[in-house]
Length: 108
Image 1 (cartoon, rainbow, N blue to C red):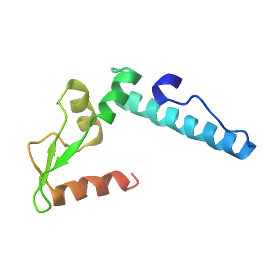
Image 2: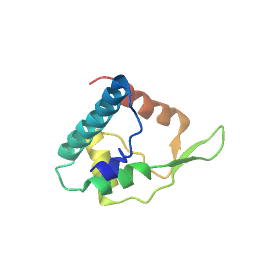
Image 3: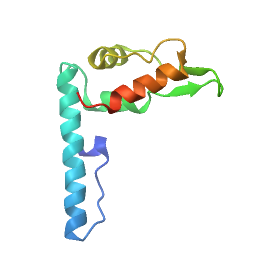
Image 4: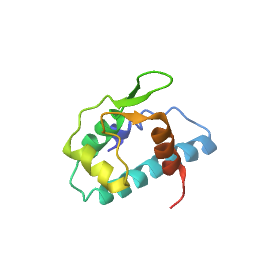
């Protein structure tokens, strides 16, 4: 998993920076493990990270909205079901996208 998270090489020497790097890696691993559990341990680390990196949306124009720029897969469907919102519809208005982003920032 170190290679998947691209945690190496590390060019830090000061103790505070070493601790900060370790903490960042530890939190990344924790978030991944929670995500893996929420998805039922059905997908590999590399597949989850590859899919998350590819979940892009394209803004059509300033006044309209967004369309998905990614291919819908079993994993994208699992992510949508696990987190209770969809981004794979043909068109998402700007107000709907703001609502989705707002929901992801709220504590649950």
